[in-house]
Image 1 (tube, rainbow, N blue to C red):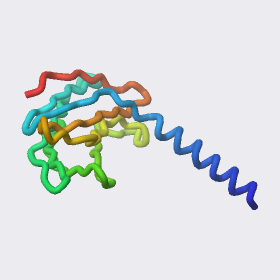
Image 2: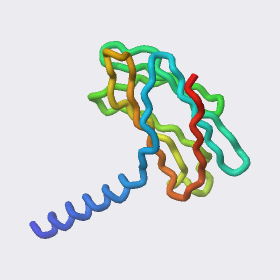
Image 3: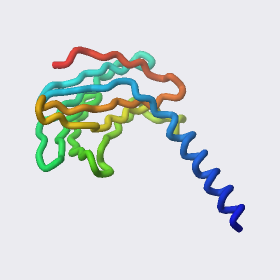
Length: 138
């Protein structure tokens, strides 16, 4: 029984490391209040704009406004809780329902002196379906 549990835990660890490796940090982003980060996403003949900014930091929560392809969202992210990040699906799933490319934006740190929030931008795109271009902050 003990050998079975050891094999099970090894399998579980290997399985988790395989799935964790599909996310790649592609950019570290630092933004002041209301400074907007714009990213152009291209796939096929389509071009879509992803943008996000933070508007308020209070009680450890960072209020984030973001939009992708003219659809607007709002999230509250925290450093010490499960909701440190949000996910943005970049392309309709279609036949690749489990491999659709997406961004994951993770809130990493808040610098009180500079009044800046720091983020990591991850990309999951195993099949290289999208091209990403960073535009000037506004």
